[in-house]
Length: 313
Image (cartoon, rainbow, N blue to C red; front, side, top):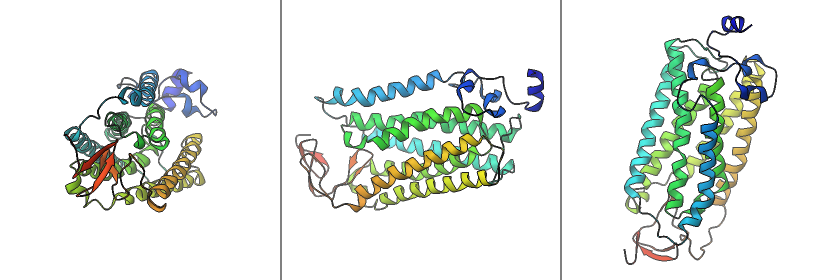
């Protein structure tokens, strides 16, 4: 029976224990991609789950540890980190675009090719890097907490970071190619723009006054989720031979983000701004932990600041 499975799907490995708990009886769910079995973090879901658990523990304990400490000054670290993420996401986008183009991928319906074709392996490797990038993005939260920007660590922020890294392990383990390329390619392109913004914002107030387009990043993300739903629904309509439970799960996942991002957009850009003690003034916009203010007095973390510097620094 195992030999027959290998002939039917030469790139698929034997049933994985986790697959027994997945919904549906589709054969493809019970055969994992043998190309990725020896890649870092792919042998078992436990390392990914442990990393995500440590992340959630830091989200909980980090603010308590920082409560009586001064915020870390991390401008150079933020600049290097954000532009490093720009390069990583640009690399992922390029690899997915060129790999899918050379493999003749369809944007309507594309099944997973588990062969060792050079273009297919290139796509699988790019998707693995995309998965790894989501783990690296946990540092977004770490930097917010170390700089005492706890208001940035919202439910949306934690939900987005934790679920993306954890769920993409499943994607790489079973479907490192085919339809999976589309969402990762689109998202990596958006992250090039997003981390470019954060990298520039980290330079401080002298450049932040030119970054008027922050709100459009949220709008771009909302467009992304709608495109994802449309693309996935089209795949279901055309009966694309891709695990259907993954399609339905992706639609539900995208809908959850639409509600959360819409709520964030309305609260941030539509509701009247109210100045609160210990918060940035209405004309100061926080970007990746750096408050936007120039030649204005603001109050942040209980300290008066002017021209972006706290008194006594």
